[in-house]
Amino acid sequence: MKFTRANALKGTVTVPGDKSISHRCVMFGALAEGTTKVTNFLQGADCLSTISCFQQMGIRIENRPDEILIHGRGLHGLQAPAGPLNTGNSGTTTRLISGILAGQNFVTDLNGDESIQSRPMKRIMEPLALMGAQIESLKGNDCAPLRIRGSRLHGIHYTSRVASAQVKSCILLAGLYADRPTSVTEPYLSRNHSELMLRHFGASVTSEGATAAILPEPKLRAQEIHVPGDISSAAYFIAAGLIVPGSEILIQNVGINPTRDGILKVCRKMGADITLLNEDSGNGEPTADLLVRSSTLHGTTVGGAVIPALIDELPVIAALACFAEGATVIKDAQELKVKESNRIDVMVKNLSAMGAHITATEDGMLIEGGHPLHGAVIDSRLDHRIAMTFAVTALAADGETEITEADCVRISYPGFYEDLEKLCRN
Ligand code: S3P
Image (cartoon, rainbow, N blue to C red; front, side, top):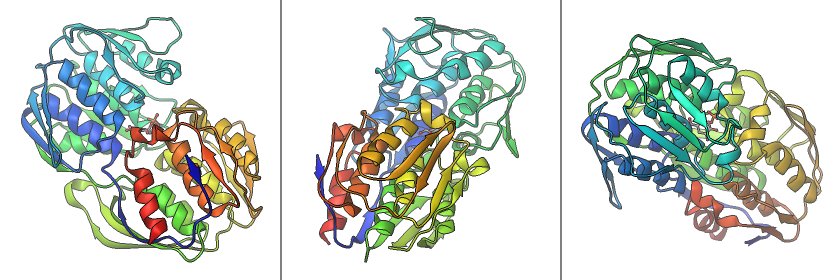
């Protein structure tokens, strides 16, 4: 797919539902009693993988155009699937479902695409084993395919080496089936959607700083959930609005949970003109409309506690830094190497191809901004966030940019190119 420089971006856009929250609606809805109704569910390939895994375990899920209905069968209502579960490209599906499967009374094999088969699973295998689970990497490389034999689980306190909501959520979900309370402490607080939503479904979950704890065997009750727009999807329009001169974009109904809003904090530190309008806090997940105007940006340092709150936005932040005056340092972000692609490597290679002054470090990137970018052929490596980052970067670069396998955006934002084009046309 090809992109060229844009004139000012104008207009209003509504991004699709939050990916993390959509996954959790299906999983928790399946384990609840009664019918959970979800509106603004993300119809991205990752969330469809979650739906399909639970359907294979006997959960009836009606995916209608305006809402999805999950007919939950309670904490002990899942059935053994007829064959291996396919989690596609989705790390969230793979890691969270493992916590649930660890507490069942059947054996499940779990596998996904090539990217999933290279992503580290030791981070969940280790705590689940400590809880008494039998979880095996079938190729012996601590990656999927995994075989999980449901077992009697024990509550533990686990100190995680990584700030990861997938690890934390996996352990809390296993904790639903344990014989005593379970808790997890992370180096920094990661996104807390599981804690908020599990509480909403009736589980007893407490949070204190970077520790979350859960009591076993709750009765989860079905809920009605409206999923807020995904700030990780909004990030591409934020960036486009900031770097294309003369732009003014209103992004409606975006989730601004403080464990996810790092991009807003960093953009503001870089001098961005972003105004929050219509702030609301339904269901404990705050939302706002974001008014973004093109801005003169300056470099900054991104690291420490803010990293988990913008981990998926770091590729587009690296791109933004190319348009800022001075240096930007991204550090404490080694996790980028084990996402859908190695996002440090892919960003450095692709931005360098466009003329950026960028170098990789052990735990991030150094970017010297202010050097004009030009078009290039961009290898997306089938990573949705890389394709969207470069579609936006190309709008402020000279010449033509071609993105390979650009349709990988279907993972988290199937209508991305159409929405971007509308803003360019206005
Ligand atoms: C997610 C957590 C993050 C994030 C991913 C979604 C979640 O992963 O990058 O896109 O929904 O829990 P990690 O837990 O690996 O940081």
